Amino acid sequence: MIKLRNLRNILLLLAIIGMTAWFSSCDSEKELVIYEEDLPIMSETLYMLGSAAPCGWSITDPTPFTPTKEDPLIFTWEGTLGMGELKLLLTPSEDWNITFIRPTVVGQKISKTNLVDEPFTMYITPDDKWNVTDAGEYRLTFDLRHWTFSTEYLKGPERPDVVPVHAESVYVIGDATAAQWNIDEAIETIKQSEYVFVYEGNLTEGEFRACTERSWGTHIRPVDNQAEINENGVADEDFIYVATPDINWLVTKAGKYRITFDLEHWKISAKYLTDGEDDPVNPVDPIETSTLFLLGTSTKGGWDGNAMTPLQQDSSDPYVFTYEGTLSEGELKLYTELGGYDGKSAIRPTVAGTPIGRDDIKDASFIYTAWPDNKWNVSAGKYRLKFNLRTYKMSSVYLGEAEYDWPEVTPIKTDVLYILGDATPGNWDISIATPCVKQGEYIFTYEGKLNVGSMRASTVRDWGAHIRPKVANLEVGKNGCSSEEFVNIATPDFNWNIVDAGNYRITFNLENWTAKFEYLDN
Image 1 (cartoon, rainbow, N blue to C red):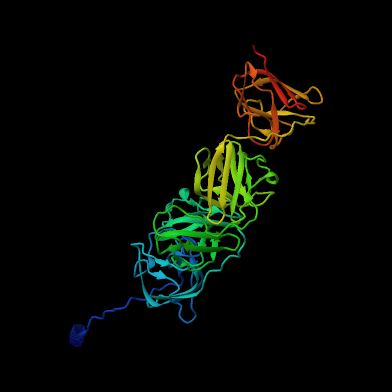
Image 2 (tube, rainbow, N blue to C red):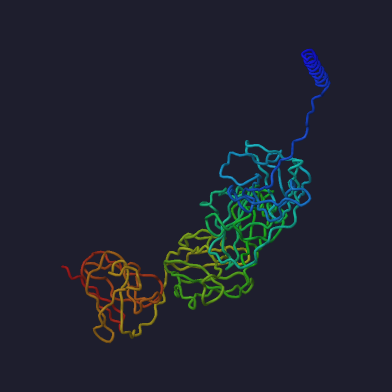
């Protein structure tokens, strides 16, 4: 028994040795297998995020893709992408230090040009992303089995309904403008009517857009990003008024332009004028009208739209109008018709406060716009003014001292009389003008303190025809006033000038148009 057992053990040992040798010979003959392709990315979910995605940069709530029925490792998404950046991740996270699916080319464009089976990669850093350059509806397909993706541009973004935009101002901003992207320095355009605004000046090569306030948010933008503006005009006359997508016009030829924004119909036009840094010029379309009127405190009618001063139309040139007569010290602009003028275009100086005085003016440019509310500052005198509505030029000739045609003295019947001005207790607040005391049918008195400053009187707490001296800044002091005469007119904008503060008694005689000042602190 013992011998048989030993023999069996010897045979078993030899069998083990033989098998070991056989296995060793097989291992020596095996070849190393190398997989040259990436292994499939095994994931049941896929998401995207970025400024172009519907979710924005929300890593905890990214935009999901849907796996296809044919292959659960191929994911698709269909929807609207804005302009901006994009990258993908496998699951929502609260940690940004994770692996993202990224383009193999930094900033690879997703646009109207479709991409087919483009490779992608996957890593943590650097933070490379796709760049969506055309907003619109897309179909995106990502194949996690073969590490490829495809894009299909379906259509442009839904455009908002065209609704008239009411705005007081429109500004242009962008690296094509002098303001660059400094929103606080955005360049104001000229308001020509309720909805039409015009920018006229130089643009460099670069991007720009427009806004109705100097702030970020909803802006005036082209329908398609980088719609070109050059010597041929603008590529597309339509614009949109939206906060996103963040798209701009692209100026491809530097020069001087006239850009017109129509906020009622959402249209833009661009006209290339000349190269260089020349001063802005005005629109070339003549102002068509058969009447023209002066308005302002320098005229007899003041700010009364129904009492504007008419100009004379030239018989040989219907675009030339002339005024000759006295103008008071004050402001001036012109309208083509009588009546209400709020929101209407007016003839104005190109620079607010441009003086009209003793120095003659020849062929100075003017603008025809509703805003900004530029006005001429007129020194009192007799003038000849000429306005050419075809060339947008005006001239002024000083003819001599002002000659006022004072109204006839007729009794003023009223139950109340007020004084106003910075010399009075109510200052220039017309709503709290200081009342006088009625002493008789035409006699009113004020007794009280007056400060150093200007004052006049009025039968109503409103602007318009007021009781004034016949001389500008007629002095009133301890010795009273050198003239008791007054007039009841809207202009010239004359006032009494109180030179000594103190208590006064003022007696107004509305029958004879006189005012007596008595200083009471002597």
